[in-house]
Image (cartoon, rainbow, N blue to C red; front, side, top):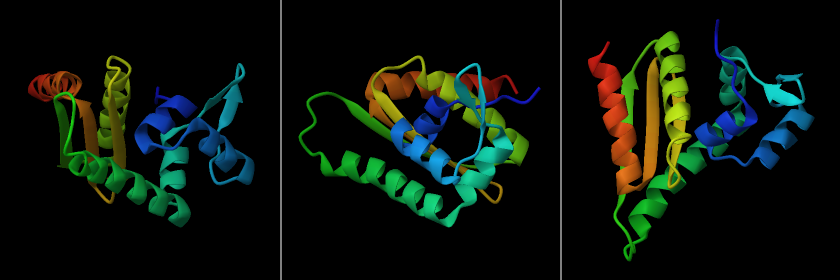
Amino acid sequence: MDRNYTLDDIALMTGFSTRTLRNYLTQGILKGEKTDGKWQFTAEELDRFFAEPFVKEGLRIKRNSIVFDFLADRSKQAKRACVILDIPVSLKESKMLSDFFCKQMETVSDAVFTFDWNNGNVRIILSGAEESVATIMEAYHGMKSSD
């Protein structure tokens, strides 16, 4: 069974607030199904949403802002890390990666990430407390080792 995504999952992947995503639902830009009072989205619905030109531009801006904000903050008070992963994958593999990173983000409190799949390539940008980013990267490398 394919995994369904929640508004919180999409917010994690995109950097958009759940309020913005609800506005997209109202406008018909994002489509899903409400089950037991919670919105659920299939991977196919997300692919269509991410392909919308307006959304693509917003995602590009969000991704760039994560990296720019990291680089611009020259007076960090704690150890911070920013990782950009470019991974050539199939659509099926991209779904597994999005599931993996969404679940990992639930385990840390001080990190953000964006996820973008485009024509066989995934770009993941992960930024936050050094320990949080390291924990997620260790889990990612552990997952890749077990393949």
